[in-house]
Image 1 (cartoon, helix red, strand yellow):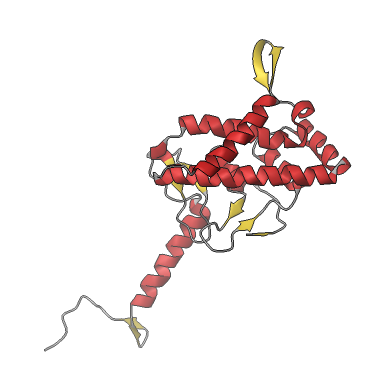
Image 2: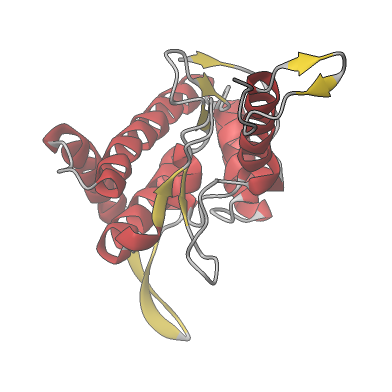
Length: 222
């Protein structure tokens, strides 16, 4: 896996859930050298704002913490990426109908327990558990995603969970379309590329003589 510098855009959020969108911050998982779009802790925060995991105020606090403690930010990023890769293995197995490897479950469970240990009950109109940057620090993004991922495990609609078959993609997503027939992570990217590839294949399969295509269904003369 290699990392590139690239800003996130709304079109990158196709997973239908923050846990899947975090997994999808790596693309081209179907080839030997996937591409990681998270090139540093600030990029993780940028993704988290776009994905609705943190708000602008929380992002500003996290950026300040990261700037004040670069080494701690790097360590937090490593933990977030370890969680991401374990979620990829776990959700990928569930979507494929396989058992989730114990190592992946153990890593996600470790992140869940760490997040729960930093969760406190607060009374704001009602009593509810809440994570805060004061308690989670630079792990706030990972803590939030870990807890939401556990909820998704329990509610994952297996018949609507998909792995995009696009070339150099491998993104995971929930099919929220009315008919439940969605195949691609995004028709505008992987879907159109697949259509173009099929068109090229059909074009190459038809011989051309003097600019006219041969009717392959015609019966050859005796």
